Every structure is written in structure tokens, then in C-alpha cells.
Length: 353
Image (cartoon, rainbow, N blue to C red):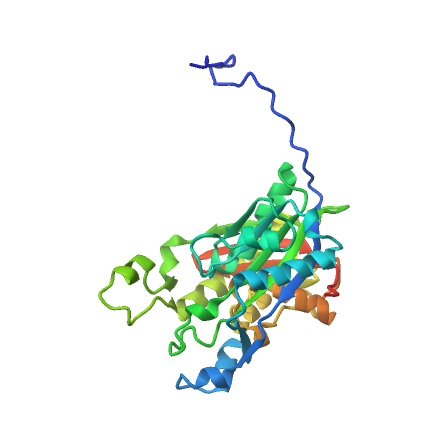
């Protein structure tokens, strides 16, 4: 048995001197990439299964269209394309990446996770790679994990991807979800920068409300059931989620600004999760930002892409010129869990790919 070493207060201690972490606090987003599926699905197509019209959907959600994956598109293929674009826009290759984090809740296979084959496909074979399953807040969670890995010295550059194929989970006759969600992937490279460009995260969950967004049955119940006529689908209590997000996420946004040491007057752009345009209008109003500060609104043609929504929104803001590299941006994710994350970042260079 190894002898127990104790200090002068009787507390266990080690006789080994551990190496000092070699990480940095000067961390930022080096580049960004995006991928959207080829198939465009307008509201009129969704309405064919519902007793509503296109204007009804737009009035309540701000959505006019979204993208759905085809047979040759998946979490893996979308992540690879978005990841490659982020690397190219960072001036890097897969060989420059030390870790890969893939935020998704809709990977079609329980085993293996999506991240390792994605890492290999982008040229980062052998690096630690894992999925992060936190629903719509997943990208924020992955961002926080990435900066903590870099700060501790466990990695120097991390490829962070948010990707979802929600269309496969939708009951197209359910007016609670069928017109809200879309598919897509966004990615960023997180790494060392001359100054600190990523702030601390405010994150958390409210498991007491986890059933507000849920899968209708687990796979065990489905497989052991007498009949397979009803498969698992995503279900959502939209009214309750709207109420929670509109009021509770305002508090999270303000706590994020306080923890970062800035005020709403310092913001150049607001990038909330693209869940519902009406929610985000309320959040922006409650923040009391300066007049003219752009608020991400690509939900109109993207829908709610869960963990992919924030990087896709950042990409579109930069590509359109509404946001500029270096702008101070508040990122705010929220959704299934119920989970949330808030973080202030400097916007990365505008994408060319």
C-alpha cells in the first residue's frame, strides 16, 4: 500500500510536483464557417400538412423558410463542410487543431459519436473529439469548454461545431414544431489571440422543466412496444417555452454583461439563439442597447437550427456586413433541457469561404 502523505494540518498531500499549466487567457475566435442543406422548404410546403397559412407562421415566428437535409446530407457531412470552411477562413488546416467539440442533439447514431469521424475528415485525426448534447444552448457550452481547454493548456486551438438535423425528428402534422425547425451547421476555430476576446460564460439548466421540449418516447419503449406505428418525435410546449425564454433569458443576458464587466451600451451586435423572432424582439428591447445595434434575425430563412443557430447567425451578420470583425457581441443560447448559456465575444474575421 502506498503510504499516505499529509501536510501540517493533517490533510492528504502529494509528494509529486505537478507541471504548471501552460495555457493562455488571451483567447478568441479565429475564423468561422457555415453549411446549409440544399433543400429549401418554404412555409407553403409546411402548410400542406397543417390548417394554417404561410402568413400565420411568419406572424408568430418570423420564419418564411428553412433548410432540410437530403439523403446525402447528415450531421457528419454538414459538420465536415462547416468545419473545413472555418479552418480555411482562419488560415489553418486540420493539422493545426488540437481538439474538436461538436454540439448536436440530433446525430442519428448512438454509437459512435459524430465528432471523431468529423475530426478525421477535416484532417485532425487523433485529436480528442467529442459530442456536446445540450440542445439549443449546445454551441455556448462547447465554446466555454473550448476556452477552458485552451486556458488549462490541454489544447491550443479547438474546432467548435454546432450541427443539427432536426427535420428527422419532426412530426409534420404537429403545429407545435413542424414549421419552427431547420437543419444546418456552423463552426468556429477558437485559439490564442493578442488580447482576450472571449468572455466568461453564464450557463445553467432548469431540469424541472425538461419536459417542455422532449422526445415523445425513448428508444427502449419504442423497440419493446407491441406496435411500431408511432415512432419517437420531438414535442414542445411552445407557449411555456416562449414565456420562460422571454423573461428568464433577459436576466441571463444582463448577468452575462455584468460578469464580463461591460454594459449594454458597449455592445455592437446581439446574437440570440434563433428560436423565435418575437422572443428575440423582447430580449433586445429589455437589454436597452444603443439605437441601431444589429440583432441577428436570419431565422426568417433558416428557422430554428438549435445548436447551429448562433454560429450560422454570426456568419450571416459578418457576410452581410451588418457586423464587423472585432465587434463586441453578446451570444445568448437557450432551449431544451431547459438549458441556457450567455457569453460576450469579439466577432471573428469576415468569412471568405
